[in-house]
Image (tube, rainbow, N blue to C red):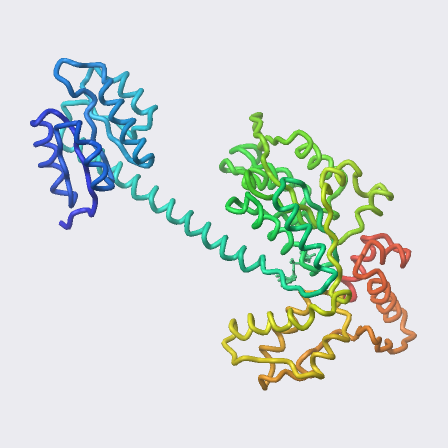
Amino acid sequence: MSKVDAKILVLDDDPGVLYTANMILKQYFQTVITEKDPAKLDFLLNQHEYDVIVLDMNFSYGLTGGKEGIKLLKRVLEKDPKAHVLMNTAYGDIDIAVEAMKEGAVDFLVKPWPKEKLLATVLAIYELSKSRKEVQELKTGQKILMKDQQKELSDIISVSPVMKPIFHTIEKVAKTDANVLVLGENGTGKELVARAIHNQSKRGNENFIKVDLGAISATLFESELFGHVKGAFTDAREDRPGRFELASNGTLFLDEIGNLSLPLQAKLLTALQFKQISRVGSNKVLPLNIRLVSATNMPLYQMVKHNEFRQDLLYRMNTVEIKLPPLRERKEDIAPLAKHFLTTYTKKYQKEKMRLNETTLNKLLGYSWPGNIRELQHAIERAVIMANSPLLAPEDFLLKDDSIEGHSQPESLNIEAMEKTAIQNAIRKAGGNLTQAAIELGFGRSTLYRKMTKYGL
Ligand SMILES: Nc1ncnc2c1ncn2[C@@H]1O[C@H](COP(=O)(O)OP(=O)(O)OP(=O)(O)O)[C@@H](O)[C@H]1O
């Protein structure tokens, strides 16, 4: 039988105990170190990291009460807070053994122990220490991975002068804990800005948790945001933290805040006002320590006027406001962004280096990009996949027929075709703002959504 690759330390002033423990454990573990002098503890701890430490409660002859054991246990945990210590105690020491557990020992054994009992206990502790190490490694790996992703995402590319004040604001606000509201059309980089604020803040090493409020149903809202305890409702099979808790000490990014219904706005406001939450089904109050960044493409101020959005909630969120201009108002950014996405996607699809010829760049500059940077990103990705030559031609870009130069829509007397054209024009005129477009068309917002789905817009 091959031995387990683990190091076990046994510290006991009874040579008989050391001899027996060594005999039993060395059959299963690769390294077993025994020591009878507690003064050597520091030296031994400096030499190796042990998977399990078996520690006697009483060292000096005649001394009972376990004071020495507790002192040594504290010393071990001071040097290595993750150490797994098994206390070795005499029958009368049970109370003090329990105290040792409270101090951080993993388990205790009562002397004299049968051989199987020692082995089984040390093996169980070894397995526990192994799995805890694995979890720790996974967590560290995940953190590094998240950090890498965040780093990549926080690369905001822009040369446009209209973006300069925005960069200054990001830099200034990142140093504070102020709540930030990011406004802008779809695809203008609101999430990117939120991540940049997080990464540049002192919370940068903690979690950045995004909640897409447009995608959360009213029934799931509380449990998603505040968490729940086991049995709180039929599907709650275990305790689960909510996004607020996960964002603790970090940043909570509430995307599509304008899509939140009034009753849910009230629930969110309460949590933000009192800076505390309780998991669904629990009375325990958990304090909140989060930086809040919210974003929307909806006209929040107009919605406040129409009683569609709570003014008090808006004031909680907009301590600092950042308004991102659409891509058509920062055309200088089109070329560097296109270059950036070309590099990303030629790498991703393992294509040779590609570039745009002048006519192609002019085509991109002349287009209004209603979907903003995300649309440009997708257009470049598609072109990289489909192009036959590394010099991208205008035909490689299939842009929607709505360039600023304005290809006029073909006239049609078909009612549905006319309605579709009217909706497209209204959305364009409102700069992608659907509430405004709905007002312009004389529809309710939900009617507009329904018609957009019908016409595949
Ligand atoms: N300045 C920029 N530099 C590089 N990439 C950018 C920039 N702005 C946006 N992007 C990229 O464009 C895409 C859309 O950006 P993002 O998701 O941040 O926009 P958004 O405004 O949050 O969109 P939505 O309103 O649809 O949620 C992302 O892939 C993002 O990385």
